[in-house]
Image 1 (cartoon, rainbow, N blue to C red):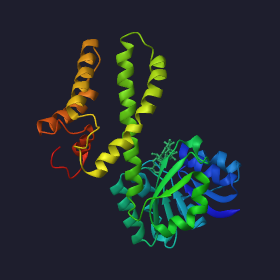
Image 2: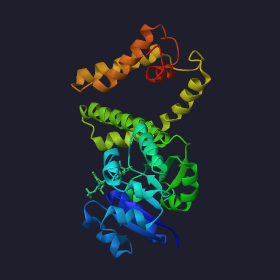
Image 3: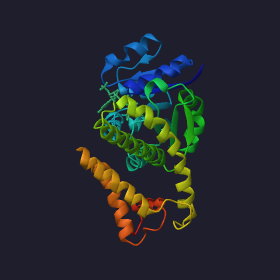
Image 4: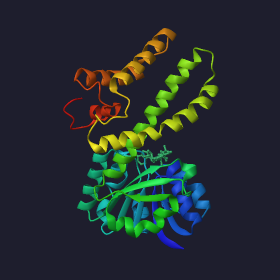
Length: 292
Ligand code: NDP
């Protein structure tokens, strides 16, 4: 028994969110643009609303898990005026500015807004290994906490509703470029006859061990001095990258990914930073950097 919740959007993720709440004994009203996706949850005890207006009227806590920013407006624009006093927890992936726009729009209609970024796949929902980042209204976060904690480990990142999405996308950027690097490496090893399976078996412990370098780089970055001793210099890193680029070319493998990283390193060296530590590459990405 707990707070009643409305869940809008019953894709893979929305369905997992709603099912977890049903299992925990919450009263759940669901709505999906394509109504037949509600059938399974209905059979498990959810109330299926035939119109979005009826869905948002059913409970004061409304959760949206739709496709993108535009689909949130498309779904809620017609009914937001009637939602004054309700809380909207938006778990739809958006950019930071899109989340901020939704927060202002909701506030303009007297609706409390909490943005959420899900760092999990649908089968992980309900387990503590799943993580969801939140930002926006602190009162909504605190009040909804018993519901939010059913899904995942909840982290509140601040009043700026764009932060959850920003921090989520920052983590995903790290993940995707590491995956791309893995695939490039697999293609290189493949030209020597190694299967991708064998390459994965070798790469996994190596790359896992190397992630300790994140904290070392972070200490240098936060210390603000890239000349501190004990780091691999940009010149050395450049040489290492040049070997990978040339080996890729020799083996007929597309070097574009590693060449793009080398390009950033080269610019730092051209700016006279070659003897500094490779953590300096952070400056090549920094928004207000003057030496990228
Ligand atoms: P699905 O593609 O499975 O479902 C998309 C949902 O959005 C469906 O319910 C669909 O309705 C609805 N939808 C799409 N366009 C509109 C629209 N214009 N108006 C109303 N409803 C619309 O996606 P997921 O459930 O996997 O993802 C939902 C959100 O969760 C996304 O923002 C995604 O980025 C995020 N997310 C997903 C993760 C995952 O692993 N799946 C991980 C982290 C975040 P219909 O059935 O009618 O098409």
